[in-house]
Image 1: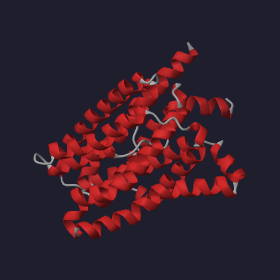
Image 2: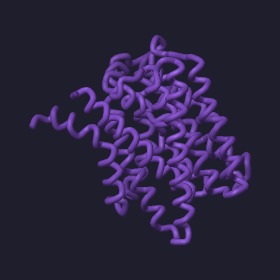
Image 3: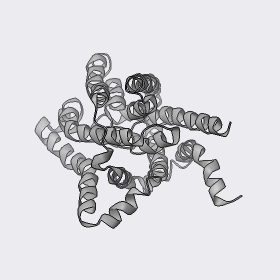
Image 4: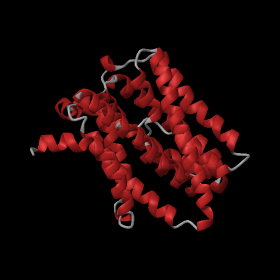
Amino acid sequence: MSFAKFKKLIKPWMLPIAMLLGVVLHEYIGYVAFLSRYLIFIMLLITYCRLKASDFHVGTYIGWLLLVQIVGAVALYFLLAPLDPVVAQGIFICVFCPTATAAPVITGMLGGSVAKVATYSLFSHLSVAFLTPPILSYIGAGAHIGFMDSLMAIAINVLPLILGPLVVALLLERFAPRAHDAISTHQGLSFYIWAVALLIVVGNSVSFLMREPASEIPNMCILALGAFVVCVLQFWLGRKIGRRYGDPISGAQSLGQKNTVLAIWLTITYMNPLASAAPAAYVAWHNIVNSWQIIRHEKAKTA
């Protein structure tokens, strides 16, 4: 079997394999966990290098998707916080976190508009970059070190991580167009980098959750179930919004496929770490949906 055939055969199964390896190798993931933020940076850089002014499809649908992502997340938090603050934090981050950097790649594989998803990914990440410091300072770390100190600490860590790749992409386009073009023509790398990041983040989450006492298992199950519900809802709402504008696939992937690497990092760093069980479960849920969609799409193409 040639490498090209092997690559085509294994690609639909890459995400389940990465998650399985993360579970199996969780004891060793701590040695490479620091790579998560660098992988996030690289994936965003690859995505942003693809975007050009002519690719932007800014429309009303972006406003509707952002409304679900931002307002929906905050509304769910305030709805659930009186019942259980940890569950509220976990469900909040599953909705609030931006579109996955590999979402344009998956969208392209499914026949949707890569440009639309890449455009929304940019707006989604920029929104999170500016809103994360005040919101997480209020609902998470602010209770421990003070709102303003927390605001500054989160801003210093989050803004460069999300805005830095955009600045680098713009600088490359202006001063090193060949390098910019080389990166933009290798968008498929995002998928494989995402698989590595997924392996790390799943392993890290499993390691953390296994250290929790048995008494927390019911809370973890509630968080996992809540993540499943909001995952299905976001794919469904995204598809409905996308269908109104002629592209249900792009709408579903924009809203349902999340940057869970960033979500888990934000949760463990700035909120109650136990709440990371929700985005950790979301890793499984949205990748199960993606894997099912890819396999179904490949079978349809073959047929």
